[in-house]
Image 1: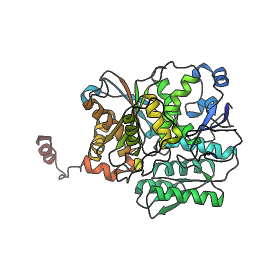
Image 2: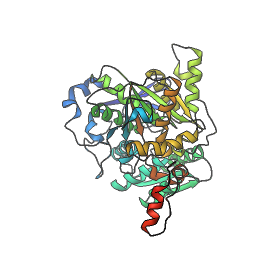
Image 3: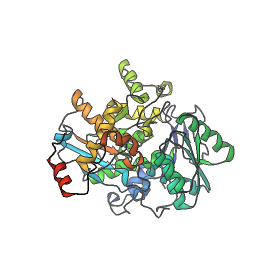
Image 4: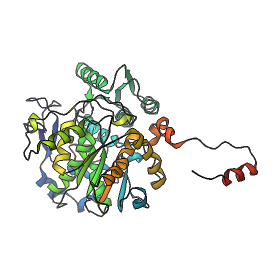
Length: 420
């Protein structure tokens, strides 16, 4: 294991591998896990291509004691699809979808939960907890069940029914908090400290980012060990975006790539704290940034894309750094365009996204309209969660089936109607 400690994202203070906390003891900032990249480079076997078809093939770049997956389930190893007729649907000539709906709980969050649970097993924890708008909770419940751990999940009371049903089916103890995600997050933090639970919550537990970064490794391999020009990421608390960026930085640090992609932040206009922060910093024209002094904006989120509905981004600073360091764009999209993107993605590619997972597609279209990306760039949209997680909102733009009488003439009559 080449994991060699922690570094604060805000003040850069370092901690040794035996540090028992979750946040920086100097400033309270989030931590990033560091590696001995020279050791990793010397241990990589044939560019990871001989490992299992899951994220544990990247064991040299994971901070875990076990070299193999502790799960009977496959986490990671999801497909990258080229978009058919991309120029017609979006204006792009080379557009790809990274389909993480095929993870065990049908979301990218399984990557984070896999590494977090791996860490929990390493330190002998028997109860794992998380605050979630839905997907992180479903994911933790799923993978905890697969390893025999007890999961305790805190969600806002209005979390989508499909996600709550998943959590309960997997045997988690689910606490629906009368309040928003931030209320659930703070209560989970307090309860985990009080009862000694291993808290997997995003933007608090540094190990979650380590799982999400593996998405970038797979994109690189699936593109024939090539680097795309951009990766567009749906963003709420910022952890997925910062994980995607870290994955590319890892690949460069071990000498497997010689350039980095831009990482673009796609958010709802109604939940755009990270985007507003990036815009504010760029407006100052600063070439050097004191990250310890950066304060990430807070908003009052009210978007249909529940997975990215966040008032106070808990990994916001890491995401802001990722966008600025990569030279990426921030794009904020009206909810109606996010919803409209659901059937567009489904019909163009055969992948059914939940609202948050459709935001990158809508973001690409908006950036093309604004002239912020070129049509010949190679772009990957990360599809982070299945549309089956939220059929209620999808139904508002997909419509209803045509009801007919059980006769052939009714079929003929239907077929003769003009289509809209």
